[in-house]
Amino acid sequence: MHERQLERIARWQRRTGSFVLVDGTFQYVRWDRSSREEPTSRPEQDLTTFRIVCPTKSLAVHGKRFACLLLPPAFREPVRYACANTAGATGTAKEHFVLRITDVLDSDESNDLLVRHIRTQRARLISRGIIRSEAAPPEAGYYTFARLDEASMRDAIVMDQRFFGLDGFETHVRVNFLHPGWSGNAAAHA
Image: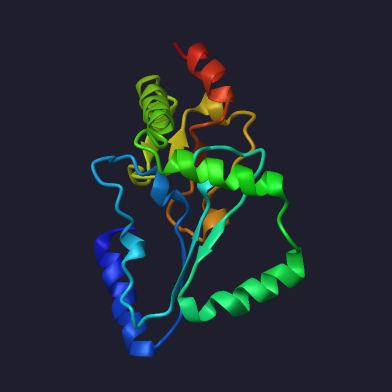
């Protein structure tokens, strides 16, 4: 999310006293690796902001999944209590997995190899003419919203603008750069 948008939300939040829930899942898969700062981690102290982050998505580890809710201290115990009584305790193996994933994400290398792979895959799909145009160049994550060539669309099951509440992008679909089929598809277009 652009810095201007974050400031706009903060102004609205100050004016209305509203709670804000941020889905920050892909902020850890930013393509510009010059800064690892999280723009959404700087809420003003008097604002009530909750942030959801999903380290397994940030590393593309989809077999096991967990997310973290970062919240103001005043809400920790009520949320912990409700979650513990709804979902129960976490097993030792899962706790080990969580600690290992966060160690990797917090390391100097972090998910740099994954980000390079995503950027390379996008460049390959563009150079081969599979991606014809994008609604906007991606800055984070492993998706783009793009118009694809006819061969790629022929038998595809897609998520189009209707899934995202958009208008004006009738020919665009969500493209997952990690889809294993792109390797074969990209080779077929060579």
